[in-house]
Length: 228
Image: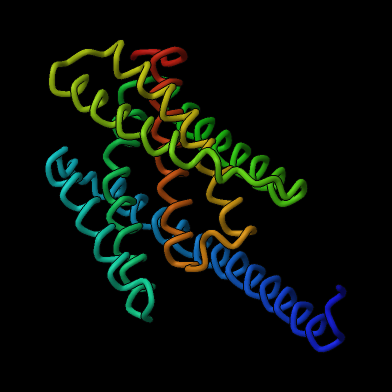
């Protein structure tokens, strides 16, 4: 039995509304992501200019998870946008001392930083374009990526606290791959309606870019850094 004309009209309108909603989330996500990246870069440049000291692993972790919770709690209000800028600004602050360390520790430190930045941008644009063009659904990767990131995170802490440089390099490689997978997954979630909150989508992609950039920094420094 074929649906009547009214039913077909309702279905068509529902599909159109869904498509418009998806486009709105995608557009708002990329707009907010652009602003937060610029803000974060500005904060990082400021901390580099004043030669700020690193906040340390404990403050970094507390700030990261605390501000992540704040963004999530405020995601459905205008305050969520402000919280997103605080969160990304904090991470920008933490990366400034790291960049100064690379620039001062390696004779080609500036080249390492720019290469990592360029590679991060290229990977992000390539993966996003692939998902948006093919519209493939990568939602099946969610469970694996979450579990793998938890394992890599705790392994990375172990390598840091027990001073195991080789393990840290392996973890950086794993994080680079997992962050790339997350970009595929998160973009797919947006275009297929799995993520409808552009603030949370922005933060998720930003964290993936942050982890990808810092992982590439460590890999480039380990394999291509020239000590002064």
